[in-house]
Length: 94
Image 1 (spheres, rainbow, N blue to C red):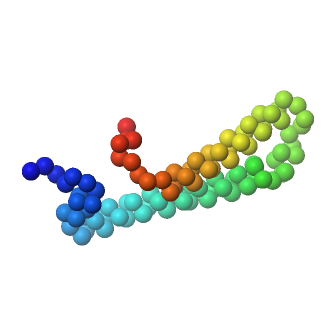
Image 2: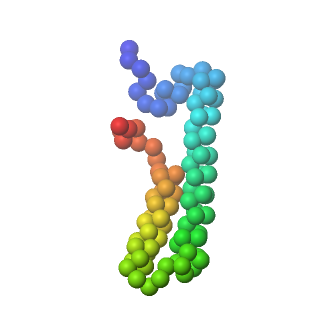
Image 3: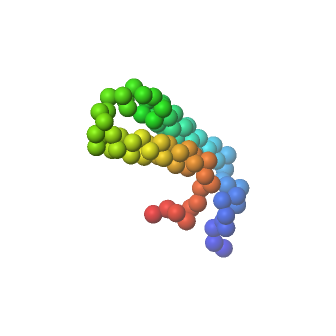
């Protein structure tokens, strides 16, 4: 007989202590992800939505670089937010 065929079956055969320990690790990872996302969001509030930083860039080729930087930071925040709610896929592991 091989091991459990899916995650639900694997959890069903675990004892309570193992399940609680696994849940603690998973919840810590979620909380860490949310904390990191909040930090990114606060940083992006200054970079993307506030004229504070943009007002310091003179009209030159640096302006284009700053606009690219703003879009990249905003895009990264959106990707991280989506990743937080994305369904885990074990087949994507390295």
